[in-house]
Image 1 (cartoon, rainbow, N blue to C red):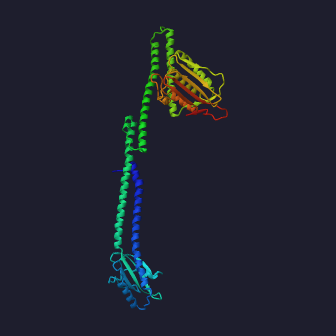
Image 2 (image 1 turned 45 degrees about the vertical axis):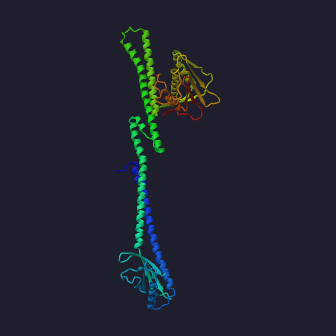
Image 3 (image 1 turned 60 degrees about the horizontal axis):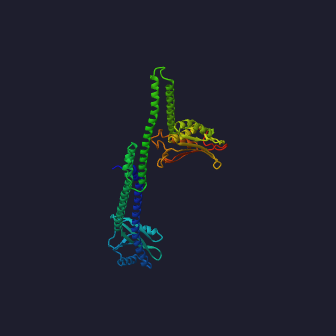
Length: 489
């Protein structure tokens, strides 16, 4: 099985580090065990050798025969013959007597005798392999006379094979334990990685289905873990629901825009065909004027829809250009209200607005874009207010809050439900489908207000009406301008 992705990275990174650490620990433990066993053998040899210094501490013999006799007595009475061998060496390093009764070959290396002669302590260790291939350790201690002349030496030798066997057994146990630990780490790691990779793989497959438009695939997402994976599952599920809602809103938006475009186009086409098919001179002036009026009105309506769509596209792509200057916000709003008074009268709606007599400080912004905001807010108020209803507008500037100017538009229309109110400034959203409009006007107006460092706040109650509050920062001479004179966003 080929590992890939997160599993492969874990195998290469984490697992390799863990295996390296376990191998190092195993090697250290084996080395420690070997050292302990060999040190134990060395201590036993040294303990036996130390006894020798007491046995021969008062040796005064001047002949080799006397030393040999004393050494023979020592070997015969030595109690640990079964554990270690004892050899008696003469002054030249030749073996003359052993506890086993067998004299080793002269080719057998006895470097410890020469090392002991060089040592100030009078003894030396040796560890290596005998001619028979057996691993052994020995310690040779010199025997001197009262003048410190070497008259011989006693060599203690122990086979290391039993210790090596124990070392091998313990090392094997340590290695097996290390392998078991590695296996457990690999198993637990793979299980843990699987608990991550498997749901992520399912999420990836589900995300691919969602990307292809199958939003129902989010229903197959299972929340099994109360951790980051569970949070990711919830996030993908919520994302799918939001995308489904946005997709539905977009489809509704396209349908509304298509209807909004079709209606004026149908009127323009119908009146254009009527005027074209009528014989020249037979169309009375009143009918002609009426037809031209419809064409002009619907053309303006088409232009407004197209401009709104273009503005929305510019805002979405960050390409909206503002031409900022000092403007009289009161004059601009007054002109917008005046433009809509006739329409309000035709629809039987009372449009109430009293222009203040005082002079308000200027606002720094794009007069055309701000007028677009005013038109959108007032147009919505008129559209959603029934015949006989009231739309009231006022401009507020007080000494208690001298840094801002507020424009408040209140209507007695159908209002907005508490559920829809937080969404009315979102793109594509339209709370009331029975009233014409693209559904992006408020989104565009809100973005324009944000670009002017202002705000658009909506308060509404279903069946009560709606209040829209526009807040603008006041321009101050010598202060920082909210926006540069011309900015492309």
